[in-house]
Image 1 (cartoon, rainbow, N blue to C red):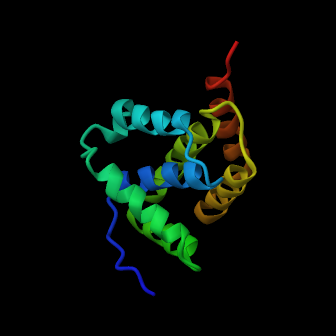
Image 2: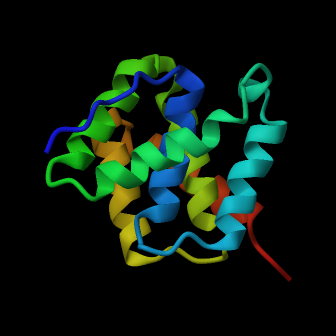
Length: 140
């Protein structure tokens, strides 16, 4: 079965990365969904974004997760829509979603590794982004 893939805007691609991390462990936690909504509401990059697109982007991600080659198709959509200068931004948003509930699950760790690989994020930059997400989401 082939899926008629929509084209993504750069902001759609950022949302797709966040949704992919949240869904990667097969459980989309409330804290992760709240984190996605908070970032879309407050991050400057989403200032002109139509929030009504979040649902369609999420459905596309979930549909692709069910397909055999879906992950490759998803990263194709994301990297086609996202300028390379925003790859680290995408990774930072992904790390924030992963860290939102206070811990990383196996599926999230694997998805973050795949994002690093697909986007060619330097290991040192990735470590700095990961640490900043971790410290932002600490609790007392």
